[in-house]
Length: 54
Image 1: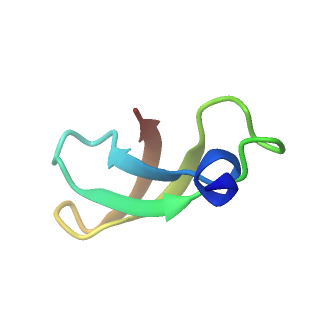
Image 2: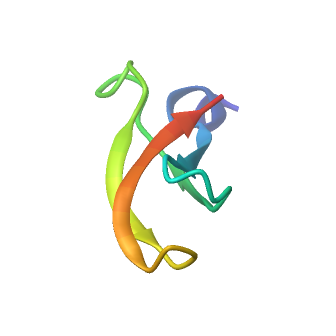
């Protein structure tokens, strides 16, 4: 059960407005604020920012 608390599954949603998402895990102790990553969005065929959605 502790695994769910420390490393929750999060959704990363594209800021390009396409609705495309990635699913990943993050360590809540090291990254308590919302995660922002630059990843590839195949809908717009470009790298864009993906923000954590809760």
